[in-house]
Length: 208
Image (cartoon, one colour):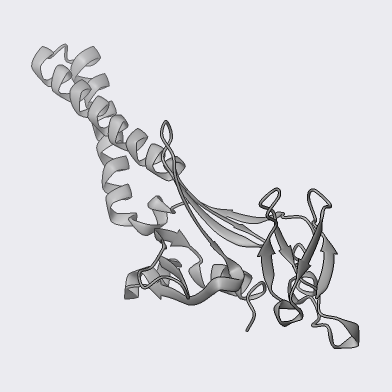
């Protein structure tokens, strides 16, 4: 048996030696702890060597990812901005210069709808986050209500990246993360920026 103090509550945890090098949840506070490998055979901390928070110790945020909606949909973004500028120009010209009521009202309505669409895109990007810590990946969805899915890095057995040709050029894609205990993919995030870099970061904390 190996006895270690919890990183968070400092209560002693006794685990089997076969779990050395893996991560366990503290039954008292729920914090994820890394069971150290005994003696000089301990693995080097690959994450710390790469300049990221160490694998061992208290849980720390490594990076936070939100959907890159503008980069993932460049043509829609360009069209929406064009519509905003055109409707604004139309509102000024027809409403203030020409004093044309119907055209001025139409331009104003289009401007309001375009700004509402842009605001909706912003809310979508704020409503979904993928937080990578040194112990787990956590997907959160929602602003008023929340839905959370998490996978401990030691349990990750499949990391998927799906990209079209244009997405590869723009550096975005869909990330899928699944563990050994689940047949389905637990974490799916669309329009994630730099998915290959996300995989490299998570691989630093996985038992490869």
